[in-house]
Length: 134
Image (cartoon, rainbow, N blue to C red):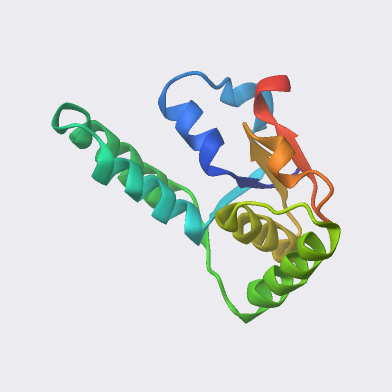
């Protein structure tokens, strides 16, 4: 059993049918998402065309109902601060949301599943896999 944190890019690929979920997630794996992922998916709903909005909202509703959401609490905040310091010292900036996802993964001992694994490369204490390469 693996503890996995599904990144927004993975969920977008899954929505589009471009992701072979069975290749990445085993039946006994424990999956979750970071709270920031709900925000990112919700932005996609709000920016969708009128034609796509209903389908996208239904998908986000299904994700929220079926996958546990890990909150940004004080433990995640401490991990986030550590990662912010690390990227500033290294001179390799990262996306703000990617760092929150990474901090959530680190706080809960989870591996990030992403279509953009490189966003998590070289972050201390972060394991990430690219679901497209599984």
